[in-house]
Amino acid sequence: MDIARIHREFAEAQRTFALVELQPTLDGKVYARAALQTSNGRQYVLSIKFSDNYPNEMPRVFIDAPIITHAPHRYQGGHICYLHPTMWNPGVHHLTFVIGRAAKWLNKYEVWRNNGGTWPGAEIRH
Image (cartoon, rainbow, N blue to C red):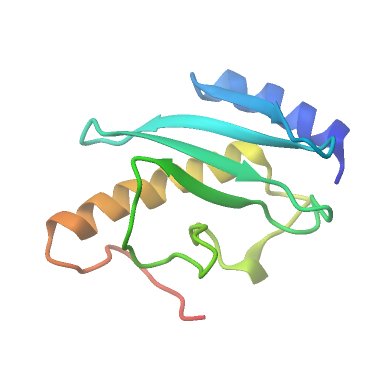
């Protein structure tokens, strides 16, 4: 885990998003938390967890509140699929990108909930 890079990316994310914070873990690592509001006005809180291999492995994004019990494009561990893992590029992608993609996922989730279960936009099977 590249802590120095995470701190740089966090500073950039703070300039883009109003409510984002970096939290320590008990084992000396960090994770990010963000609060986002969708175009429908609903508010969500997410956790962004960095693996030991970050930035070479994409972070996992979890929706903490409100609890989402059922939705497509989520992995068995509960984290959302905001980008196909093979598309992650550590030279291009960063925390601000991840939060932006999570915001896009949340807006699509709300459309899915309200339209009878059709996910809007392109989908990649995996």
